[in-house]
Amino acid sequence: MRKYLFASHAYMAEGTKSSLELILGKQESVDILCAYVKEPYDIKEEIHRKLSELDPEDEMIVVTDLFGGSVNNEFMTVAAENENVYLVSGMNLALCMNLVVRKDDDCTTDALIRDCMEETRDTLIYCNDLLKNTQDKEDEEF
Image (cartoon, rainbow, N blue to C red; front, side, top):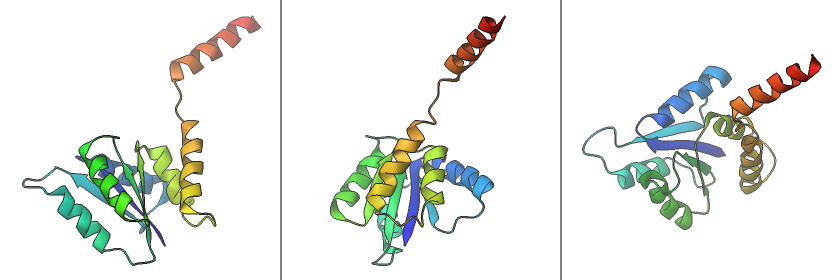
């Protein structure tokens, strides 16, 4: 079974899951890790606890907020040691929604992640350019 863990510094993971569930409804396969919000905090211990909840046949897709950040770095070690853990950095709602909506796709998890990342790239839009292009077209019509 594919499971998801949104992991971030502070509450970004919680907010992403909340927004995702507002749009898609309750998601039993999605868990969160909000790092460093309570003191003392041991991220390695928290990650170990999350992994211990998995069944041996489960695959976990971990989406972290920031490549090179401490949360991502700790999961890099985990992904290197566990072939059932897939790690993606650059958490955003479009990516998370795409991954979760397609959780039952009949493809490898690696292919699923790559497809979702490619589709998500198309959702990154500098809207000022879009507005300018729309305005330019309207000006041309007159």
